[in-house]
Amino acid sequence: MRTALFLPIALTLAACGGDDAASPVDAPADDGPTVDSPVTIDAALAIDGPAIDAPPAAFVLTSTAITEGGVIPVVHSCRGANTSPPLAWTGGPTAPGYALVFTDITTPANPFLHSIIWDIPGTATSLPEGIQKVYMPPVPAGAKQPLGYDNSTRGYLGPCPGSMHRYEYALVAVDANPLPGLSMASNRVAVRDAITAHALAGGRATLTATFTP
Image (cartoon, rainbow, N blue to C red):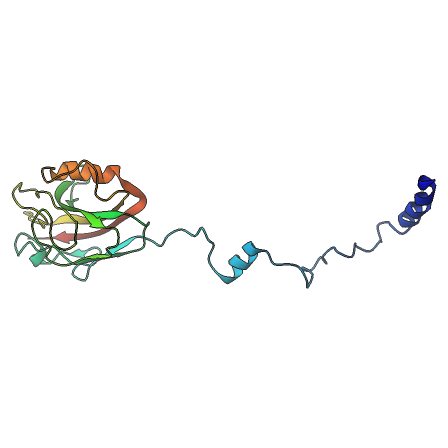
């Protein structure tokens, strides 16, 4: 009996169909969404603000004393006071710590490592000018410095070339603070290797400049 009751209804609906039939009531018009279409959370984010998974801001290293591609002032070289330059940074990944590596990159295949400061706190955003040349300078607190290229001076050793050379200040974000396996006896090559082993992806910002005696 139920089949007999439904059959006429189905035939009636079929008779109303066809190529010229109107679209279902709930279907949006071809020229845009219906007025009452709900806005999803993802769509709202796309309209009102950045995506939740937006990449971190670019990691940038700057100095009030040195411009990118510029010239390192004499005071920051061996012909001056060999004073470390002021540096500041923005962006990059969140990190427990940082390290600053100063290298002569005149010969890219054989860069010459000048000096390093490591275990810079992850909360730091700058280094002051003239960091003390000791193993653990008071500023930045917790940071450490190996002997420089002369094997007698701790901390920053600036340019000292016989002709024009090119240099790189590289700030590296690392995944551990303090870096494991290092001590006061560690030389600058061992420290550099530890920094490389613990470097975070996208965590390297550089400032390059030249010096001519």
